[in-house]
Length: 317
Image (cartoon, rainbow, N blue to C red; front, side, top):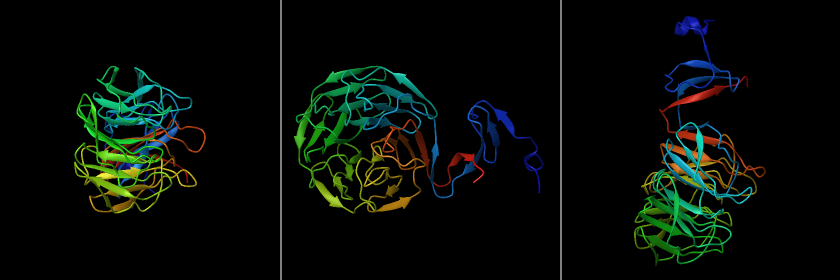
């Protein structure tokens, strides 16, 4: 059998951290993690484990992309902590002004909105890349709600525990109540924009999905796996999205892709969990924190679609 050196012309490197730009076929030993790793092309899309967050928690908010994300709030215990992600590691930044969990979150790593939450509140805060500033409250205080929007100047807040069917539109300075969901529910997830959004899942465990056209909600095709406390990615689109994690009678790793009409099952998360934060889009998503029943998770994972280059950890199994 040929050795790695005979195939590649070099020995396996021993590195304290993963290389910043590995190439396909490269293999190295990470001496910090004490594992063998390599770079390969994904065949059908897959999740890979990334850097751990600093503060374990669940029921938190998330925003941004896979390589520039923000997570904020959550519980274990109730917190206002905010962390920024650069694609591989997390850095603690300035806290929310109001500590809470079960809040809605959307936007980018430099322009985010956090609204509602538990204890039940209408508080809304805007992130400018450095600090959170309290702005106008939601019209209806609620927790475990969802949202959609590309930044903190235009957004949609919908649903909530109760169940709640109310939808509110944000114009950068105030909230306005618009038409309700067809099926009110909390612990669900949404993605898209203030004029074109998707809302899916919820408590009690459901597969119901609704689409917003800027005026009304319409029921569309269901998820394959009914669940609540899931995360989604699909910033800026209602035709390309991802739903992952969640809970029924146990924490789930199920991942599904939305093409504007139907949901399709894909590869599971490496760590099944619920009440996690999501960011990114259908081709490059982020799953951060959450609950594996107990305790809250530190783990974050990156999703890459088929054909993307991905770092793999090799095991003897």
